[in-house]
Every structure is written in C-alpha cells, then in structure tokens.
Image 1 (cartoon, rainbow, N blue to C red):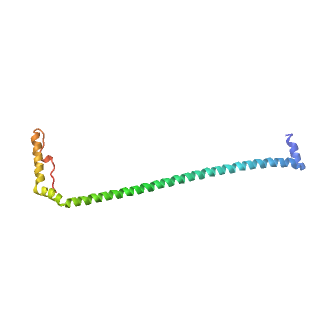
Image 2 (cartoon, rainbow, N blue to C red):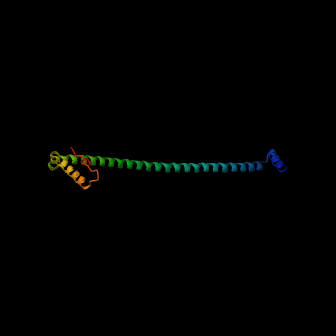
Length: 143
C-alpha cells in the first residue's frame, strides 16, 4: 500500500510519466489480446473455408460418379432392349422359315412328336419294371 501511494500522488500532482507508462502497458495488453483474437478468427475462417472447399470438391466428384453410373445404366438398358428385340425378331424369322415349318410344323401336325414321346416312354417302362415310369412321365408337346 505504501508503494501505491506515490503513484496515486503522482497522478494527483499531474506527473504524466507514470500515467503514460500505465497507459502504454494497458494499450499493449489490449493490442496483443486483440491481435490474438483477430488471428484466431482468421485461422478459424481459413479452416472453415478449406473444409467447405473440400466438401464441395467431394460433392462434385460424387455427382460426377452418379452421372457416370446413370449413363452406364442407360446404355445397359438400351443394350438389353436391343438384345430382346433381336431375339424376338430372330425367333419370328426362324419360325417363318420354310425349313423350320417343314420339320417342326409338319412333325407336330403329323403326330411324329407324339409317336417319339410314346416310344421313349415305352422304352423307359421296359427298362425298369419296378419303377413307376408311365407314359405320362414325359410332357406332351403341343403347339
């Protein structure tokens, strides 16, 4: 307390040296604090901007991958549609060709397929007497 008295007395007397010294110290503390606060804010801002930039890049890459997969899916669907159409066209062409009509159509019409089925069933029945193989075990082909 005795040390504080001369400082107070010098303020009262009007000596500017102690006032300037205390003011300079307080100003220096304030500036250091403000500079640290400003640097901290700037550092946080830079971290935020970097994180935002990184997330935007990742979102762009994800969108590009989605677009690529969508395009691939579209191409695959188109390819499948083309293949199905080709199979249907080829089936119609094959069914309308004279050789197919002559062999399969005439064989079915004349009962050759039923005769072949009956012969196969008879062969099975004769080979296994204890087995219950009947003429109904092979499906009938009718068109």
